[in-house]
Image 1: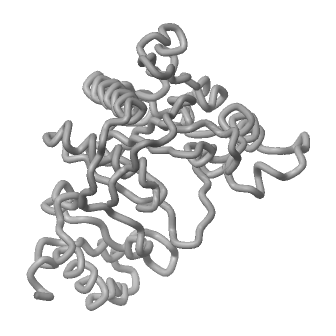
Image 2: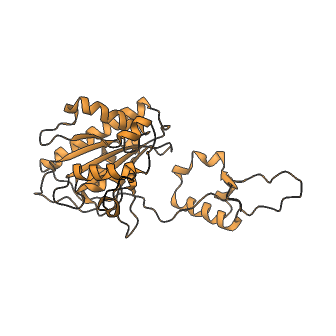
Image 3: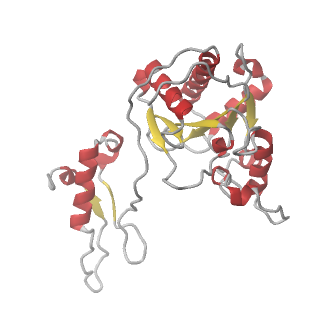
Length: 297
């Protein structure tokens, strides 16, 4: 990644959004806290604006009411003519676009930090649109250097040629924090505290950026989507396989070569179910076991 240029325009208009998904409680409770005590988001050169992104879903403690808000920031939704039958989240996306955008305009906020939780055991994940987001990449690297014990993984979520659809894409620069594991509708104190600390560090980085601090070029590892693979299924659409208990917690630690071997093992096996004897019990699902790591070397 190239270095950040000096001099440069400072980031003055910054927002921190929580509750984009109404049952991801760390961001919900942080947004509520900051709406009552905004001084925590102030720095010398700017003051970040707290936003509770999806109030209706938050009140219902649901991911969304009608439509995933974090998939509603496309031009087709934002620029279409409003109607009384529009999903709640589409209407809310237009409101947020007016508050934080308009998207792809010179009047948009300089930076939006969107807060999320996941039930997956993925630890601390930093989600940016692509590696072309230079400011976001330098911010991710700064977080990795500040918190090496967290092993902050960088995920580039935007497919090649795809229009951005998430909330932070409304701003000129954006990043999402996704922390887990945390059950839906539950607030874990350790996850809450970690997210609060990370947000403070993000704002401190923006302050350093605004003061003209030099950030040199660097290299780092990032992940991007290359395809989608479902679990093996029967002709009726039911699960025909699942992850072996010995692999369940190891999956995030697998290296690229290990994953290639697992996927090749799946393709070779095909997960075809044996014919079921008439009147006999159904065949149990195939289990992806540890032998997948050794059978395709």
